[in-house]
Length: 635
Image (cartoon, rainbow, N blue to C red; front, top):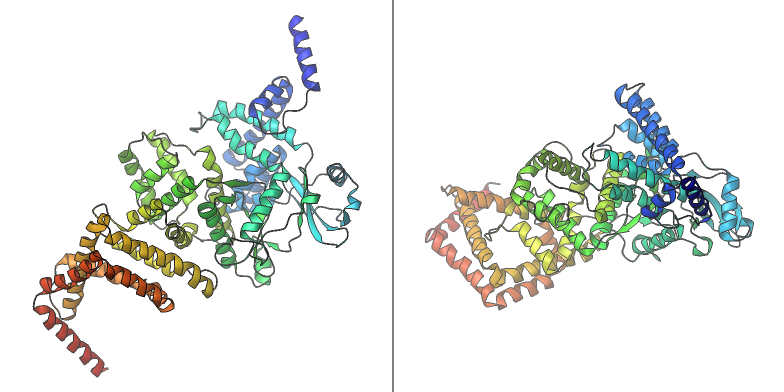
């Protein structure tokens, strides 16, 4: 009796206490629902029974066609509520994890969910605006134009100037439902995570899945994110101050005076979904251009600015009739610190260049790997990842992270995604998934590599310059000509936006990088590279000269000459820069020859040429000239 009375008093006092879900606090949620075990049991039963049913019917029995199973999964996730709808939205952008029929069906979770009643929406509007909606809006649609997991959108016009706006109204009682899911999922994660080989803390898993949803429930925060994003990236004249390269991006304006924690009023944007291929063709829009704009803008957000849209799935992207890419829904926006951006840049470049040693160091700096991890073991374990990437399969950065995690699990090596970088991985997955969904076969990593190199070249900090040196130089100072070839090709392929933009932004970036390279060569740290470069250039000259006159040459000289010849294929950018800014090159030459080391390199090449080729240099030069004159005469 005493125990029962105490429990009753605790439950009664808890019922009168204010709900603890104004902010995300898993411990407070657990304490709240510990006194309500029947709610926990009922919700746990709902989740387990639905998941077990889907696993049995879809996974084991495989009942029905692929499309029917996809519909069954979508309905099941919708039944379980917003936490699982969010999971379905993420899976919709992962064609590497699910069949295309599933991905297509799950896209309906992005904006075609069952709406809640209009009466509730209008009541929320009245409570949040603290006045009748008719006093604010001249007209207001009776039915939502879109219903998503956390809210639904209406089209309206403001009173006075009749500005067309989109009004997003949050679904009622969401905080309580999401808080309950957080508690139940943490219990289930603790019980089943180890069973399925998940090497992460259960609370961190729940924080990532459910904690982000709680942030999205604050529409005032979303309005601030939207306004900041618009000021950075909107390419309309009066808006963005830091737009992405190439293409056009539109971001709706937010009306703060008509926005609260549960409603947000923003500029109405006319457009069509990126997944509406027929509509895009009907408007004569370039799908590849739209995808490239989204990819370059996404990479810029992640690696250059550190403020990024972490949920850029097709439901949050549209194409305007004029071909602009429209961003929507800014509840899931995150920031990444400069040190993490540098680490991501190193990992990206190492991955593209098939450099497992550099990738391991980058992953260690980002805390994916423990500092005590043996580098040699990891390099050996990662070899299959690069072998598979070099094959016919497309390069997929998010997929590579999953592959690395699988390798770690099989090798029993600790590997985890740091919580601070989980939104980055999710954003990359959404970016790649959206690109491949809209345009099959689009390779995000290889296509964005030139832009990533521009970010690397633009950053003149000592850390980034050391990274650039590690890309093009071996540890003994010799030049990696294959990397130089890739670098120059990427520079030449950096054709984004208008020609005027190219010749201003990119010209300055590459010229400064070239100037820093000359400074390094002339410094004491560059002495090894100077000697190696002199040797390679002399060998290449001897090779090319004697091949023309039929002489026999050492194999190494031919290899160096071949590398230099391939590098020259991508050197037209340097010629363009020379034509467009000869003064820069004049200054560069003057700066080089003014220093004693610069003159030493020049005279070293001349003396080395005479020493290596001896008296045959003049003879071979004359023979070469004679042979060329004969060709011209014959033609």
